[in-house]
Image (cartoon, rainbow, N blue to C red; front, top):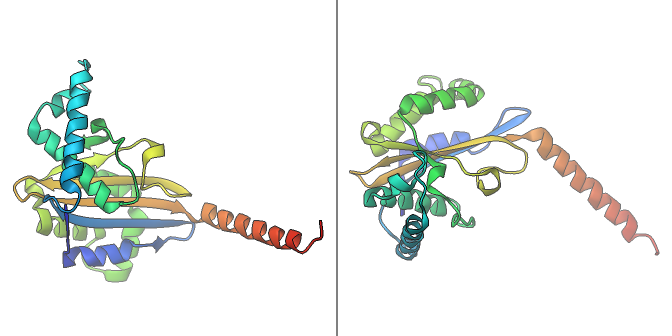
Length: 224
């Protein structure tokens, strides 16, 4: 997966790098990748393919919600591998070997994403209008995505990991969501992730650390 630089994404990323909303901070980013193997991608891709085939060989699940039927298609397996490789490039220090196919959910349309975005990003959208005016934050994201991956040709996936396997959740996180916009024809994917952090929890954590350090200094000066 090769990281692609696109100017339309830069302004959005700058705005969402750390948006302080008082008691909360929003962090978000959009990254574009071409689905071409680079570095260790080929080895990792082969390893993921073998894991999937091993899973299919052992599975006897006939539940309609099972990912088995989805993974029987080679093109579907390639899609899953591209999404996991994207995660590896976004978070190189995180281990995604335990990622399962059912954690990637295909969304029906842009409207599904819009509903989730509007629910969680209302305050951030207001800050965007105050800062830039003109088009809304969502409209700006739509235009940028359309320029990079042509939304009308995209499959939209959301990533829904277990809480203990979520690289997007940091200390004090209130919520997070992640989407992937994948264009098969262009062999290109854009990842979009948002996380909301509680500044109150973060401040409390910092205060606890400060108290601990001060206590340590007191004890350091004592003869025991």
